[in-house]
Amino acid sequence: MSRPPSAILFACTANAIRSPMAAALFRAAHGGKAYVESVGLRAGEPDPFVPVVLAEAGIGGLDAHQPKTFDDLVDDNFEVIVALSREAFDRAQELTRTVHCEVVFWPTEDPALVEGNREARLDAYRHVRDDLRARILREWPMGQPAPEPAPAEADGTPEREGGMRLRRRGRDIWTRMRMGIRRMRR
Image 1 (cartoon, rainbow, N blue to C red):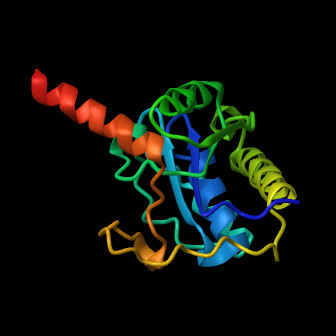
Image 2: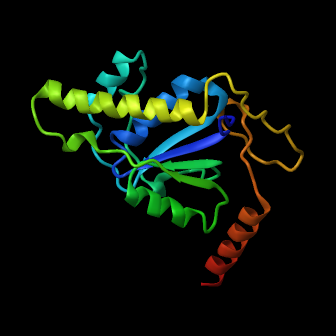
């Protein structure tokens, strides 16, 4: 059993179904103990079935979800990136060139590809919801202590919503400085 990460990113292909569903399920299981975000390779259209199957599980708040991409991320300091599609896994691996984090791959079927009537399609979404919930709880069981936010430092390191500090690693800072210097030279 491992503790929930302090910052987690769920990624899929269009940020319309799997990754926002996983993010909502993680938030429901672990509350405000972690910074949770979701992205896709491209920004698809919000899927109307996702809020329906989450509401069936007592989870709300996804009605206003607007899909976004990796490029839309404001903060890339995640402890764990969970990729739900092969393409998202490949893109997440690219992030590890400049950011130190763990990338895991949970192959998850896209329920939007299921054909049939409304009930058959909803069953596919329910299956994905239940599978993601089981994986999240298996990996990070409820009741595990979340990491304590680091005390504020005098260096002016910014904080996230909820008081969680942005995690800075030496390698990341130096990489960003080198990238910034290269951009200035151009």
